[in-house]
Amino acid sequence: MKLSSLLSITGLLSFAIAKNIAGIQGLNFQISKGDSFATSHNSKKPYLIKRDGPEGTIETELINEISFYSVNLRIGDHEDEVTVLVDTGSSDLWVTGSNNPYCSTGSNSRRELGGEGQSKGRLISDLNIPNLDNIHKKPDSTNNGGTQGSQTRPSSSQATIDCSEHGTFDISGSSSFQSNNTDFYIVYADRTFARGTWGYDNVNVGGTNVSSLSFAVANQTNSTVGVLGIGLEELETTYSGTSNRGSPYRYRNLPSQLVQDQLINKRVYSLFLDSSDADSGTILFGGVDHSKYSGTLITVPMINTLQSRGFQNVIRLEITLSGVGLQNDRTERTVTTQRYPALLDSGTTLTYMPSQLVRQIASVLNADYSRSTGYYITRCYGANDGYIVYNFQGKLIHVPLQDIVLRTSTSNSQCVLGLFESGDDSLILGDSFLRSAYVVYDLDDLEISLAQANYDSGDSQFEVISDSVPSASRASDYSSTWEENDSRRTDDSNGNIFTNSDESQAVSTSAGGGNDNRSGSSSTSSRASSTSSSGIGSSSNSNTGNNRDSSASNLQNSSWLMILMIFGLTIGVISI
Image (cartoon, rainbow, N blue to C red; front, side, top):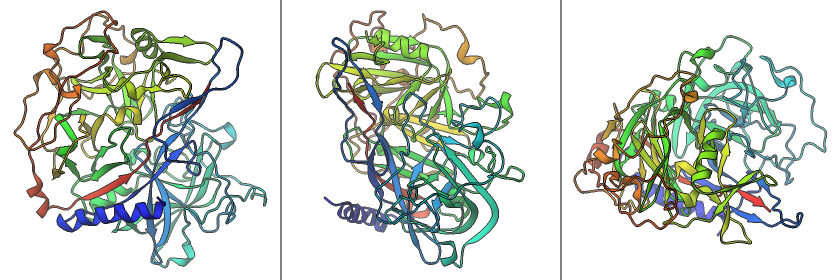
């Protein structure tokens, strides 16, 4: 099926939803998966391809295949159509300008947008603040600094990007565009960059017109496609970065502008990626869909891990991870009760952890470290072979072991453990985690609400968010306090994340929601704790699913915006 046909079908679906519920606008996300945006394809599973190596050894090379969530915008009074990538881990919108000298219509050359490799997935490199390497990956020293400097114009051999494929924005063709004469500059870890100017114009997002939206026009970039960041304003490059020549400032990015235009009531959105086999999911701006999760939404505070480095406010979507365990239908095993900061980042494909935590989990799973490959080799897990369990101040999220292994094309029994070292004492929980969670990001109250994702949701149960998140309860261990040495404290090896958790105290609500036949919401009080790892990996048949109250009636008198995502979930290609 051609992409154009797919978009027309999903467009009809969005229209059907929008015309029946007042205030909902549909936005179609395009499917893109691969090691770069331009070379993306439609396979859903990571796999391993054999490569010749010394006899008796396994030689591997990790080549990431990243999930790209792209959307088409129409900008200016001529409605120039431009494709951008949607990223919850950054905060700026920038698009390619029509006079970009790297453009050459008809070329198939592309830059590699997002290879995570053995590093964290966040690639934006625009900070020049001492000891802040973990916010963004820095470019080399020649690219650091607060001003743009000079840039050599590309030769004809370098002008190889087919900019007509994803569109450009012509400033001169839009009488409604207003430049604020502020420089924009951003560099990525793969040495691609975008350089231009900031301005304002009307932007049509999925049929909804957002007036005077601030964005940057990159008149010089070797990147294939622009980015739509929807994170906290404090992470905007004009504020936390050094691209601006004047004083740091914040502006209204898309979530804030939606509130300003009275399209939503609050800077909040809900993320549902669905299962690894699904081809669609949703982002709801200004609302929550109770059918998309099982159990209870539990609210935890965002934490400021950078206060000692000069940031007085939270700038990243980080929360406290209170422990990690493993579980199947017979056993529960607490791996650690050590506290770590965890970034919930849909712009990262895999999961990254402190090296100590990776080793602990690998040990419980009996995974063997391969010096020749640099990876932990483990058996391949099936759909019912257990879960890795994350404890967020009392809220447990269960991630199937099947979702954290990378398979081989030559073996049905040997896989690579898809947990990688973060390089510090923090975690980045990317798509391999987020597929198992329903996450509500509240940018106003600096809180995140989580529940186990429900893949068999049935009819949607939308509710507008005007104040606190409806039907959400505060975590039993709710605390926004974070000290820099929290993640360095001695681990309590005798702790148990499965006792006194919010799951064991949850009370079912009245009927009306979908059920989820996974162990994400099951009461752990009926399970026996075990210090043996022998049971982890066997089949699990536990049932879950607390029904949710329907609050669709609240929609008629409230405004909010729904984004319908059509996306890919391929997370990696490994060669051996």
